[in-house]
Image 1: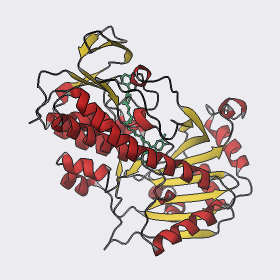
Image 2 (image 1 turned 120 degrees about the vertical axis):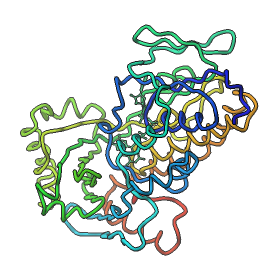
Image 3 (image 1 turned 30 degrees about the horizontal axis):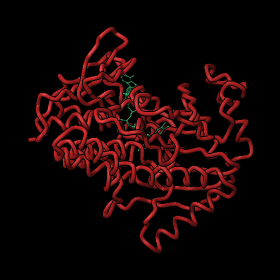
Image 4 (image 1 turned 90 degrees about the vertical axis):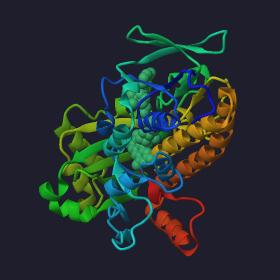
Length: 396
Ligand SMILES: Cc1cc2nc3c(=O)[nH]c(=O)nc-3n(C[C@H](O)[C@H](O)[C@H](O)COP(=O)(O)OP(=O)(O)OC[C@H]3O[C@@H](n4cnc5c(N)ncnc54)[C@H](O)[C@@H]3O)c2cc1C
């Protein structure tokens, strides 16, 4: 049981993986947080692909929540194959996960992960359809929350788990997210083994990275058999508007995307050719590496809201889960909310800034000259000495 009074009102904004995990961990310590989510119901299954869950962060939080065993049953330990080739089709890495001795970063789909957390949570604490518009500090030290649906609440601790474009962040600093220099176009190949067996065989059970020419095509096998494709381009921030590709006309958009890769290996181009009509273009944003804010005793941030980074080291969801575990521990151990926030933030700044630096390095490597060769060289160094710094093998 937490030493903090059960009467303290704790609001978590956002029911992504970070917000849900924090709510569960606080409930397990006898507290009664309320989660406010703008979506009308759980939309996690629709908003992301397969995630590799790291031992020291995501898996740690799952252990704290008593969910590790169930997670192990659901996670796809065998889906850790990893292939890297260049635009001409030359392979630099071709690893097959060993079923007897699988890697320690098993995959799970975002929707399955959130369902796992939701099943253990007393979900009456979640208020769907509540979009936070404004958070206003009050003279008595608490914070007033104003929602788009007209609801108004007052809380002692406000936790922003509201993702990349966090509203809560504005209460703590003026810093805005920056464009990372990379734009991704997401495509889907559902039931790939049935609909495009050759491509499924080429992708194997895991991830395929084709890199060259300052571009990448990434194929990622998901738990439902779909291959999620990320066509990734190092382009100007306004490229989506200026490129002239009609993203609302899938056939033409795919033809125009293929033009960008006209001299690439045919097997790689198949990732665009075989995709169905769902096309999701998005710019990739990040917060400055080492981002911190001026401490405010009753307000803090977790997950992407605190340290948005590009997905090029596959850390985002892992850090969101770890932040939840660290903040829940601090609330449990410290006597006051102010002490808990101070202790959590000091700890979180240290590990998240290191991961943000690694993510940025991975991004730069993936879009550099001879990227596939460089990645392979870096990975082989890791094999000789156990990795201290994680490399882009964890990308996405
Ligand atoms: C293309 C892509 C691929 C990725 N691949 C990986 C990967 O392989 N591995 C990995 O670890 N990470 C990956 N990530 C990053 C990962 O998705 C995020 O880091 C992770 O989802 C962060 O979790 P979170 O709970 O902090 O925020 P989110 O998952 O963004 O959840 C925020 C929640 O807050 C809600 N919300 C937002 N604003 C408000 C508001 N004003 N009021 C109420 N609710 C609000 C949102 O609806 C949402 O439910 C990827 C990201 C992208 C873009």
